[in-house]
Image (cartoon, rainbow, N blue to C red; front, side, top):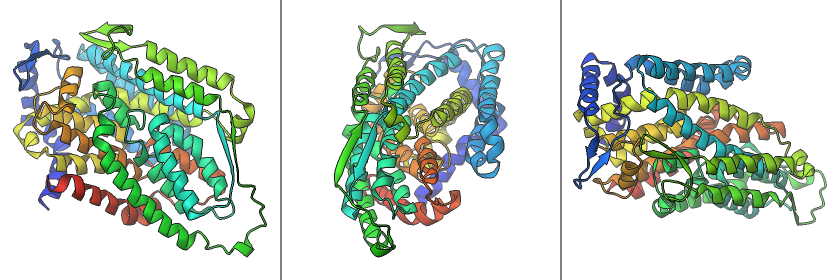
Amino acid sequence: MKNLFAVFMLVFGMVFLNLIPEANAQTEAQTEMTSGDSAIHHNDGEAVHSEGHDAHGSAPIWLVIPFVALLLMIATGPLFYENFWHHNYPKIAVGLAIMVVFYYLFVLHNVHGPVHALAEYIQFIALLSSLYIASGGILIEIDKKSTPLANVTLLLVGALVSNLIGTTGASMLLIRPFIRLNKGNIQPYHIIFFIFMVSNIGGSLTPIGDPPLFLGFLKGVPFFWTIEHNWPAWALALLLLAGVFYVIDRKFGKSIEEEDLEEVVYTNKFGLIGSRNFLWLLVIIGSVFLDPNVLDWVPAINYDGQKFSFLREIIMLSVAFMSYKFADQKAIKGNEFNFEPILEVAFIFIGIFGTMMPALELVGNFAKSPEGAALITHNTLYWGTGVLSGVLDNAPTYLNFLAAAMASQGAEIGVIEDVRNFSLDNYEDSSFELMAISLASVFFGAMTYIGNGPNFMVKSIAEQNGIKMPSFFGYIIRFSLPILLPILFIIWLVFFAFV
């Protein structure tokens, strides 16, 4: 109960304590103190150059409203005003982002924040879109009788693949073969477990796997940190889900009697069309390592003491174009490939990156306060990050809680060296706190349709194939709460509760 209380205090404290005038005064005082300093002194006594302490004011409390409004509309739009949202979400996302960016530029005279947000958005969307487009040109054909073992095998293979081409790429690549494998007896729980295992939890071993982890990589978390720290929880969660799915599939997978199914002759053949697109995927994966902050020879744009890559993004976007232009048209048609899902992600994240700057600033200021620092532990970070990742998008949630955890120990999320030191446990229990944030943001993203980008994409593809998917709340009540949440609780008990 103590941990649960602390979670709620942390989540709501970040928002509401900043609405108190004294908290605002404290924010201004902290800004004045840090504005005159050119360095932040770490626990080891080293002085590291601080970014973001220019002669500009701090964002006012009310400037977080566009960010909150956008996230609420992302959550409610497809459910309650679908037609309006579908036709207007690009205008809404871009419009809210422009409001915040213009305030930073022309009122706060802060060029630094928008420039960093733009650079990170370009890096983020270049990876996501290139993986989506390249994987869309690969068609996997399976002509085999469905069995619980075959289904579990495909789900576990998909979980591994999601670390190589991202949860978005793996979902796009494997959801249709999974549906075809279960032709004649496909049921909603098949799709739900696919979302759990392939579209979310599977991608927690590499920065390529899931958007929150890639944002952490861009901020300075070493590439191999995730597999080193996350694999035990990843393996346990997938084994538990695979076991539950196997039991359910044995019991309900034959709920339609075989004699009632249309006569189907299986050849037990496996077909692959568009295999050359795997080469394009390898180029994308290889380009991820072209990080100018790690490899000095990689050309970069130097701004405010930091290096921003552009070669990596040029390669990714070029691969996206080439892989689509020269894709096997049979694979494109077989996958019913279109650009609508990635365009929606692109516009939505323009809004998220543009509007979340003041939210990150406020979270950091709250975490620096005695009240905020006292609430931040690996337990509250796990449940706090998880709760918000389930009901909001998990990528900005990851950044907000990482900013809070770092700020509570005097580190800055905008300083790459600070993030690297935090991940390497150069602060007290910092690596363990980052592990809690990373696992929770990825795992809890499966709690709702809106927790992670691929969730809605998979749901849409399933419905196009005639599968009656549960509603937003049906998904939560019938599957997330009784199946996924207990497993996430076990993960907490095993890895965090008693440490």
